[in-house]
Amino acid sequence: MYYIAPPPYRAKATVNVDFNLEQAWPKDTDRQQFYYLERESRKLEEIAWSDELMDQLSSEFGFSVEDLRGDKLQLSQPAEAGWHFYADDDDPKVADSLASAWTKAFVAKVQAEIGAGNINEFVKLEATQAKNLPKERSIPLSGYLLAGSVGFLTLAFFVVLFVRPLGR
Image: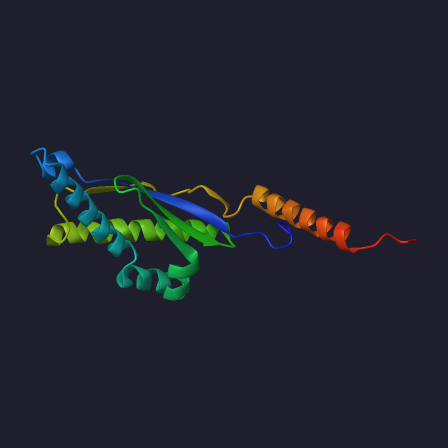
């Protein structure tokens, strides 16, 4: 099945996000630091999925915004450090271009928001991986092998239970 209907390719771009806690909250107040991290992370996540960015990608690549948000794009954001921007497509070049464009648009939009004062000035972003992205299938061959093996064993179980041997 893997070779008949292969899963789409997935490209991964990375943006390094540094909230600079030591500068934003010089006093050691854990509760305020956690609130700051959560608030700024939520703001950045909202920007990543914003209508402005999705409309830009939609017009550039010809996918609907619903497809981008539902099937094509995924965001893995561990709060601080590397945020991974994933794009899925049957064509590895399209997946690469889409992930790269999303990453670059995100960084540009956040930097504009920092300049406008909507994001804390201590937040620093750097697109660390936006070209020649790693691309691999979104579901590995081993997943298909496992599902096929389980399916075959289940089918064999029912055959043994309910099918009578010939000649009896």
